[in-house]
Length: 166
Image (cartoon, rainbow, N blue to C red; front, side, top):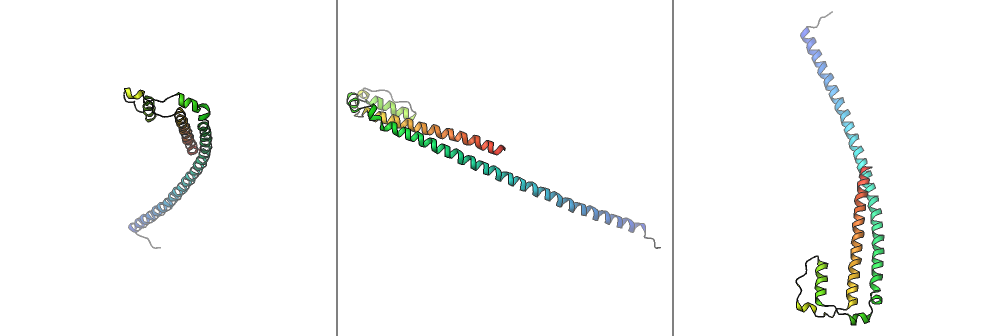
């Protein structure tokens, strides 16, 4: 029986220990990498599901918005067409629109303070009362369209939040 000297035994034991640690390291790294890859894949699937829910919510909100704006536009156009029924030609000739009214209306529409009134503001402009009524009706139509747009945007934001939380 041959006896292996103890320094060689220690060297063999150290080499075997290093080999076992290296093997464990490699196996552990591949296991962690597999877990990492699975987590990345799961996140990608969840992100795709969120994008799909958000796309569906967007289509829903846009469809509702388009329908509501179409209704608002149709109502507004009907009102504008009826201006001459409610403000007949006789009212146009009986009522004069002065420059002061025009100046005040234009400043209000622009969201600005009007210039100070002048003597010339009392003079007639030749603008018919029916034209003023038509302009006001068109402005309200635009206002209602903007309100529907804002309502749809708020609904879209809420839907995106819900879609992201699921």
